[in-house]
Image (cartoon, rainbow, N blue to C red; front, top):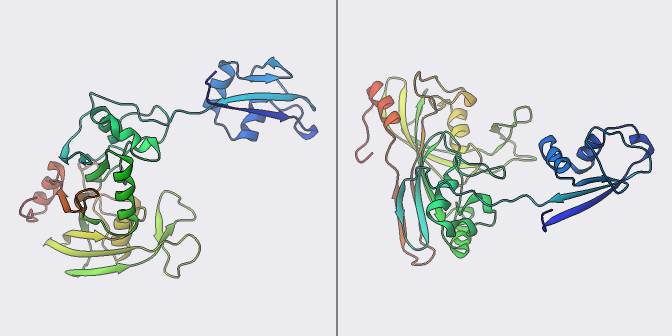
Length: 314
């Protein structure tokens, strides 16, 4: 077995007698079926000292030993995965995340994320973040959001940049295409919280209360045509789905964002939200650094389709 493992000893109480041993262990230790199968296949489960099969029934008073190896959390390098580097130095790497790519793995051995590609090119990034799954990334973007992200190559740099994000010292700018009436510019000061019935989304928490997080956004319209507006949004906080939820809350949901009732855009296959720019103070040189991500071709095509002017430099 893995040298880094935890041994659990469980005693079957009378009210659990007759239960399948795998269900008993899963309930007691909170393990998934897939994880339990691996443990039984590896001979890591013993009942009264003898190897057990997952279908056997337990009896009152039996002692069940379970050796649970620690799951590997490091990111699996993917040398062949595409990676677009916008800017890099000895300390930081700024990346261009495509829509449809997760920021980093959530499960051991998961591939296909930006972090997998990053650690293949810069192995030192794997040890920079506290959670090895993050591969040195200092923040996250939603899967369908494209644009600039920053990663650190040392633990010191990662800590400094994370503190800058937490201290609202990072300038984050997004471009979004929305429909609905919207002023030329404005601010949105609206706390957000997880929706009680839909855990995959957030909702306004006007009165604050339990679970509410402060969220502040500033916006300005870059171009208009009919019902459509291309908006630049600057956020100082970093609440889940903040840009999406804030724009929806003021009656201007993002095009293609079905979760927040945005207008459908046939053929797009994502919502129109792009992390356009990041600006921060470099953790080593202490000089300002600003990095921009070009607007992806599929988003540029949507602007042209709706006769919206593409901003210079996009």
